[in-house]
Length: 257
Image 1 (cartoon, helix red, strand yellow):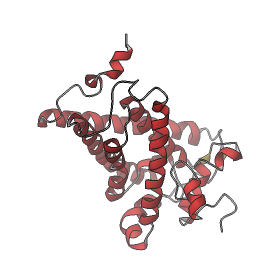
Image 2 (cartoon, helix red, strand yellow; image 1 turned 90 degrees about the vertical axis):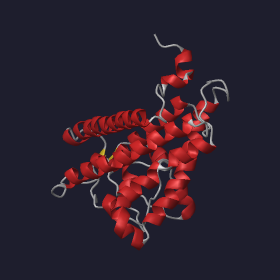
Image 3 (spheres, rainbow, N blue to C red; image 1 turned 180 degrees about the vertical axis):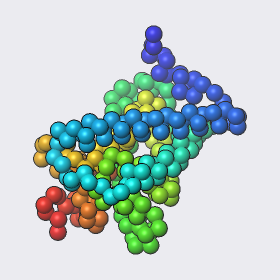
């Protein structure tokens, strides 16, 4: 039976010495297996639940994709997963080296800080993602890097991780940088990683799942991101709409400028 102390023990998260090459190799394979397993489980589930049944939400396109689109999306996603696994291993190495702000005692910053840190990470991530995303739409960078992701004009859940390796690297370095600067508990970190995957899938589902306008006005949804894939010069946000509002790059379904 798990106790509270289990979640406050370093060995519960990293049971081996990552500075040993053999152990690091094993850890990388485990992380990669977990990322790929989570990708296929979550994306596959979304595909069968939402695409095959066609019984949920507002459909944003006709689901008739170009030949081999899903195969290409899976291929690029596997490459991205390899880089995400390197990022995960880097997180562990940084933590073991003692250079991160990852902490174990749940009460060290108070229980309220747990959700607060999650929110703080998402806000910083929003700003980071917005500006790197806008940068990747510069013609030279777009043609060589970001065009891979935008080849999915009609988005599918399989496009969630479909990135050129350079773009995947830009996404992958965010958390290793953040954990060096901003305190976070590993439980919150793991929750945030799952949240990142869920939102990536929902944003690329090709279906609007959020029925409430007031929510869609403040949070990125399938419809919001669908416009980005269709128009490209609008809706660069990740989780929230505030950056697009502040920077004047927001458009809503049926109201593109």
